[in-house]
Length: 280
Image (tube, rainbow, N blue to C red):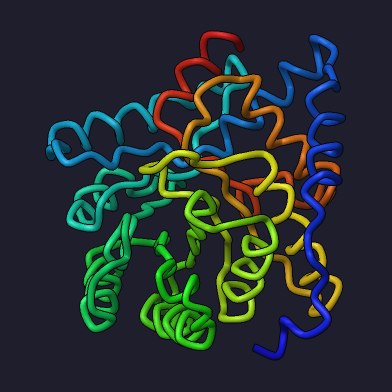
């Protein structure tokens, strides 16, 4: 596609060097506490299991609501993320809380179904109350270099979202190299993604600092080209404070302070919140 013209290959050794430097950075105790509190406000609190029940989803919503504690300076989480059949339930539970209702869609996690089914799923989820849609790209089409088809599908899903925000999951662990991660990120952004997201959390590797680094660089280039700020979301395997801090620092260094809020930066997680609350 046209936006691949003159696109440079990603040097994995250079990315590894940058990540090593990030990992070696330490925060003073006061700064660490401040950042970890902010990280809480970035969390999409997630349950995406085959045994999810209404009771389990309600309990997750209650947990999200009860997290906020102004007296202890603990903020609310950003969203609750579930399968699309729970859209209405979550929206009802989170009404007037400021916490968003996010759902995965488009045949999550594989994306291996008919486009008409994907679009119908998105439309139904939005009608039921979803405010954010986390879609998966068709990795098979991407790996076959059918980039226009991948682009067209994302664009159609974006239209089906109406006013809901669209997060596009690249599933970086199924792409063959960091240059492909870069290409997929640009396709998603050109097609109308509000966010780009690393992973479904259903395969290994899920989120990696290396893929995330490349995605932030793609966002930076897109912003310099268009003036539009695209959000970013790592997800999958982010279960402790140290790991979350790595992703936070990558955003801080590559995109700057303006991205360090939940309108442009989310972290998909299920167990991270408990770890952060224990520390702060």
